[in-house]
Structure formats: structure tokens, C-alpha cells
Image (cartoon, rainbow, N blue to C red):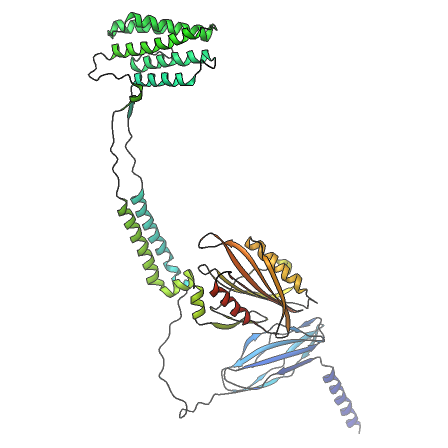
Length: 530
């Protein structure tokens, strides 16, 4: 009787212990075929200070972990799900898992899994020949080692074009302007300035004497510009006697008188009348002519006094027109070689998909893909599979966001863009204002795109029981192809609850029929996983 009493107490203790254990496990199935998956779930009552384990699998290593899903927070408990599979038939035991709750250890029950082989009836199932090994599709990484060769080819083409187009240094054209012709040209320019009408007598005489002094210095090689009037006249007399150039004494006296008159105006503030000034100007012209005749009386070339035919070319170079057709042919050939080399090595399909892109008409007729992106999932049908973008979240949101993904597709040729964003929160966020979320997203896109949205249209929608907003706006920006201001349309689906937020964005040319059809088909295909 005593033993029975003790056993009863022990049994009650075990029963109470089992009832108080806050940890439980469940699976969707315990028997699978090779390659099938099992959803293994651990549920813990309560939602504070709970640590889930790194799952321990069977001791033989035949059961594999496919994915450890994020923890789900329910009203009164936390749930952790694992996807398991096996590729070897047999019976395997998943051992007990240890859970920490408030630093106390709790153990789950063990689990028995039966993995069966797939039976193949060779009499009913048609057998096929073994297929040959199919190579993986080429990616850019497969050609990285050829980048230096491509750069070398471009450099060689650049050097070739440089030598083709470089401008040869033209021969310097030596132009000789006779001193007498330069002097007459300056006299004409002096008359056109109308300094006398402006009562600028001092400036007039300074330029007049500079003309005659410059001529004497250039044509007779006498330092006339730096000499005083007396020094210049004395030098001319000496030079005239020693070289026998034949300048008449009357011409020298006229030069002396004009220079002295100019000195009186410049230094003694003399103010001659207009007639005297004009006489000095005509005297300078006669001095120039007489000196020119005396100095060049033995030259075989006839002296011309007409200022309109002043400049005489000593050397004339005939510029030969280069034949530019050869250059253009070489450029075209070089570009064609480069294009054919890229197409031949990478293949037209690779260049089309990764560089040129597909047009909207090609998108409509091509095969479409239905796929799920992000966590929580967004299922969508698109003309091309979306690519996962690398995103670095700011530290300010790391304590709130558990997982964030963005998958995109874009084409520079068709001006078409698709984006699917999925955000998973670490904890429940409470009620989320959809209107505020939509406006915040649009404002951020406006700033990043450098544009302003207009024609705002909004409607409330529901997808698989999840409430959301559908927004359509118009905007303008420069086309990447034409650099002209072009009209675009942007459609955004925005869904949010206490645990997640999801966005689908489609941007396309507003006035293109095919683009609008593609956009509508994509938007209508969106399915949100609750």
C-alpha cells in the first residue's frame, strides 16, 4: 500500500510536470518520400526571454535542414519552424531539443521520421536514354579573366585612331608686312579715330610721331623709338652720309619740324590750331613716301603706296584637303570588329539580355515567369526573373527590421522598371498607417529620382485578406535614350500589417500601349502570402 501511494505521488508529479511544460512540437507529416519536406514546429508558451536552439538532427546525419524560418509571434506563444528533408530511405529519430526560458532548460519530445523510397514501375514507366551533361549558362564572372584583353584591344584601337586623327603640325606661315605699308595703314586708322574732333591733341601727336619713328626703325634700322628728336635727326644725317641712302635734306628738315612740334605739344602743353595739325599729318605722309623712295630706289620691285594692298606674303602654302573618307572607313571597321568580337565571344543572347535589354513588344510575346520573392513572400508574374539587389540597412532600423529584400528588373532600352520589396519586422509594430506609409514611400522616390509626382490616384485593395493601397502617379524625367523630357507612369501596391510590409512598384512609359499592358498584367498577378 505504501509503495502504491508513493507510485501515485510520483505519477501525479509527472502528470503535473507534463502539464506545466510550456514546450511542444508538431509536424505536418511523419512519413515522406525521398526529397519531400517536413515542417517541424516548436511552440513555446509565453513570449519573453526565450532562446530557441540550433536544431539537432539524427545521429546518422541522414536528415537535413533545408531552412530555419523566422520566429512567429502569436498572442500567447512563440513558434519556430524548420523545414527538414532526407534523401536516404529509412527510419530516423530527431532527438529532443533544448529550449531556454528565463534561463531555465526545457526539453521537447523526440520525433520519429519514416523516409520511403520512390517506387518506379519500369514496365509502365517509359525509360529514356541518359542525357548528356548540360553545361551551366555563362555569366559575367566566366569572362572576367578576359577583361584585360578587352582593355588592351580598346587601347590599341585608341592608339590607332590617335595616329589617324592627330593634327600634323602645320608649317609656320611667314608673312612679311612692308614697313611703309604698315605705316600707311596706321595713318589711316589714326584718321578714323577722330582724335582731333575729341580735342585729344596730345594723344594724336604721340601716335603720329610713333608711326614715323616705327617706320624709320624698321626700314632704315635706326633706333628711332628710344632717341630724342635731336639724337634721331643727327643719327639720320650721319647714316645718310655714310650709307649714301639719298634722303633729301628737305625731308630731314620736315621730319625735324614735325617732331619738334610734337615735343612742344607733349611736354610744353602747346596747343596748335587744327590747320597746323593737319599740315603736320600731311607732312608725315610725304616724309614716309620720300624716305621709302630714297631707301628703296635700287630695289627691282616697284614700291606700292596703296594701303589696301599692304600685306605681301613671302611664303604661300597651299593647303591640301585631306581625304576624310579613309578615316571614316577605318573608324567604322574598328567599331565593327569590336562589336563582332563581343557578340562572337559572349553571344548575341547574352548581350541582348544584359546590355541592350528587351523591348516591350518582345516582353509581351516572350515566356513569362511566376515566382515568389522575399520573406514574407510576394508572388508575381513578370516577363523576366527579378534579380536580388544588395542592400545595406542603416543602423537606425536594424533594431526593428529583421529581414529586408528588394528584387528588381529594368531595361535601358524600354524604360521599364519592376521592384518587389519585402520587409519583416523583429517585433509586432502595432497598427500601421497605410496612408502615411504610401506618402513616405512616394516622397522618398521623388527625392531619389529627382522628379515630382502628379495625377495622384489611390484606392484601397485587399489581397489574400491583407489590406493595402494601390497608387498610380505620373512624372517626367529625361529618357536615357533620347535625353528628352518624357512622360512616365508609376504604379505601386503597398501592403502592411503588424509583422511585415511589402511593396510592388512598376514604372513604364505613360503613352506606350505595350508598356501599359505589361504593367497591368504584372499588377494583376500579384499575390501576397498572409
